[in-house]
Image (cartoon, rainbow, N blue to C red):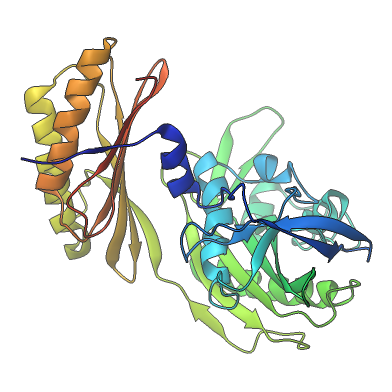
Length: 380
């Protein structure tokens, strides 16, 4: 008989977010900000997992807060541009040693100016255009490559009661498709940007940004991580991924080597016949068939697999339902949790979110190599 671990919602959120601090034994220290002003800050005592950074409190929002929503096409890319940069940062900044803070050095005005065309602002990083160029010429010869800049700061202890900036990560969100109109309020056209051209332009832009950051007070010598993020299309329901990254050593002003990244998100069920997806697609279909066989009163079952180096690392499943009774939701969740254990490999992490028009209804999380899923019924 399968055992299910029922846990409160707060614990589930803590596990997944990874940055909820302990309320006891937190450490108060002094931090110097970007303008060399000292202020008290708190280092949370608890680190949920060694892959998550502890976040300094009180939480400081990014100096360019708000721009990402208007500059990146989808909520999926918004999330991945930030969370993917956290993963990349671990290549240079150990989560056991460094603390996380949103970027404080590139403010909204600076970011907006850098994201413009060089014909619009003196420091614009996107290609210049002129009035003689038609919209089609602009799309083919001078598309907007750089859509957004994500900055993250990493701090470390400096003595017993101080922390200092010890690293910066920069994510450059790049357009894989350039959208344009041939006339005002007309149809929207799109021009695909080849990945080779995107990478070349991204590396060129990265070099310029590194030089500019080195001129900012406090950033003259700190190590940096720079990643190139390839956005998906506006209509995509899976996020883009980082395609390459480089490390700027302490005191250096350039990246000596760019390293390619093999990450992708795959939607299940898929008709893609690639060997990498075939086995997982079959597992997913069996799971979906189980749900369809016993509970037909649902909308759909959609899975998103995260792959690194051609191997699946995590599978997220969304199940929108039309159930209204608590007992029906409990029965469905119990059955579904059992199907997760039965149908997917033991070494795979699987997270299932059940939602309705009323919001979240249930959450099931099976950690890799676990035979007992965590289960929570919201408002139960």
